[in-house]
Image 1 (cartoon, one colour):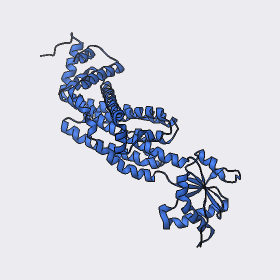
Image 2 (cartoon, helix red, strand yellow; image 1 turned 90 degrees about the vertical axis):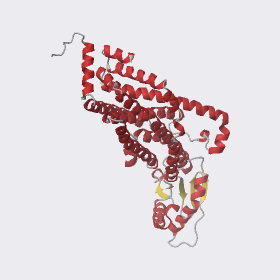
Image 3 (cartoon, helix red, strand yellow; image 1 turned 180 degrees about the vertical axis):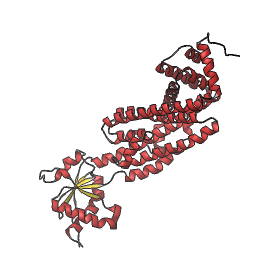
Image 4 (cartoon, one colour; image 1 turned 120 degrees about the vertical axis):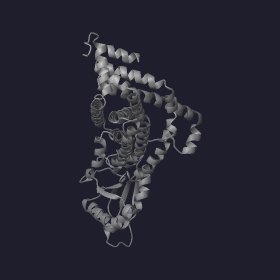
Length: 427
């Protein structure tokens, strides 16, 4: 209580007050026995990984829309597209999407192999030549997969009821934009799932800490001494610091286990981190963004939990109010995971703009797209959302708690302590 007494005796600025609260809560939580048991927490929510993996396979299968770029003459391109539209109702997903390559229009020197190696567009392969002698340019896997369907479409483009189909020649390149995008989806999915598990596992500490201090009236003493905004902000950053300590412990433990038995872990799980596709922004920046987005996701959810704690008067009310928020966070995670396969769509933009899903959606963007300016905007927006939630929670607390009789007694005691010469109340 010495820190609280010191804060009562001196008038602190908002930042100083937040630092006092953060230091107090950090030390109190870190050296408590409950924190040691809390470090065992990752053993319990592992099943959420299986739930996320259930939609992960679906996203992986559907995330990359297979497009074959057409780089033939204008008439041949039109005939291929028309034939593809006629056959799609009958064959459905067995046929790729056919689209003209704008860069090839009217360019006799168009080099399909160089175009594919430059990873421009999102084409699985490029079709060149003529309808009678088509050539498919792409990675070996994509060419082998689509040679037959492309030959089928070319035959129907030549004749309404073809008796035979042209042979599709092949030209292989090392990589393509579609192949690269498909592999980066794995990195985005794993990063999103890890971010979600850590946020949900650790954010609950904010709520439990506030409920405990409301029960023993400590929070009212703090609120009488310093601005409630500073109290909430200090608690948020204290719990965030504790979370980083927990992550550090888990990370060192995982590294130790990996160093001892990496071969056995790979054999049992089939997962090798060394083969994880590199994100679009590169590993160093991606890891840095992952840490920042975890902090923002934690602060957003923690600020929401603080607001719930401000509205609740009992532990039962806290549990009742926090359950919908927990389920909502699960839904926004699945929204962000689902929109990986729809970059630039209105649904993906909604996931980016909505504060609670924004860290997940933007971390996936870091894995898929190299642009960095979008992250600066997203982080600024998320920081504004944190401040708004903290302000709203502090206002609710002042209206629902500080107007109570206990709060009034705390305020009178505070003024008496600040002004020893205060007049005694009249008889």
